[in-house]
Length: 399
Image (cartoon, rainbow, N blue to C red; front, top):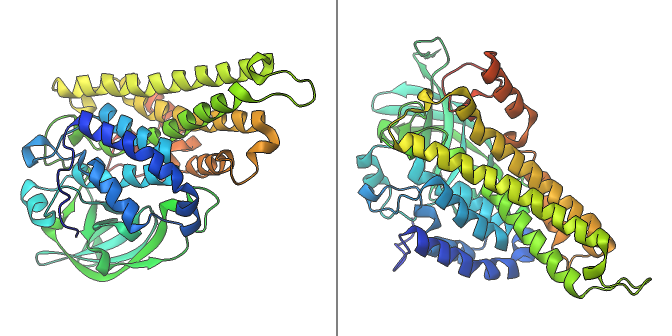
């Protein structure tokens, strides 16, 4: 653990201002972040100093308790500077959203500016023992694990060698929190995009995890909108939106002064350029407003006392579909702008090449895949979702 950072911002306005102020520095280090396949210790501490990692902690525990839309605005600002830094911030702030008891939070986190990494789905095995569990397994895509303070690992629970099951018969799983020195990182993150996220695999070999250092997404320990299991996923489209905004601003700046060398026509007077930029802006505004609008509606309903299960089917699928649309839509925007700049996009001094590769990699995440669309359609029609967790359904068996 690191020592507390002095005077860390602790309100939505302060954290957002700090994130916006840091974005130019992150942009300056983007090539370095990609080359080193991770964030330097210096950049990690700069991120920590913005307050981004404490955003999910409630006010009762001394945190700012930012709403989902406020969290998104901060991560958009950081992603505007660098995609991998924004992604690591989006993942790293999860500690404040975990369903740990207040006593466990106070014991595990000497300060609230802690960084989480890991993998929540239950691909490991946890055997019950007195006082806790023995955990083993291998997990993938642990973004930011090289600078994490705690590592989360989802596992199916076994008792006396047999898998535990819920009342509905589904396998029971919990998420285990382990310290970085208790995991072995597999250096296998050689990716075409999001290279700086350091999303490596990790293994755990028969490590004891105290009961109080574990939690279940389906067993909240708090109340309010951030207690719902989908809270961890709501902020995900922020990275894509931040990148799309960065690409749009970059191309607009280029187009203001660029002249077609063959015709002598300024780009600002070229109808093709004008229409492309305007259409991309329209696409950006559409997906961003859809994300923010769906999150505001969900927040209001949950803050008003509704449980996630009380929401109508159309309400349940709104945030998951707008999230997917934002990620795919942002990729489409960057692709169009990349093509607009043509050969200027392919040279390393241009950020377009990195942004496109980042977006292509980001859209391979399960939250941007067809099984999310299938799950939404199945939920609306009474069928079986292939990825029920996207709907906040935790203990339903899926294949």
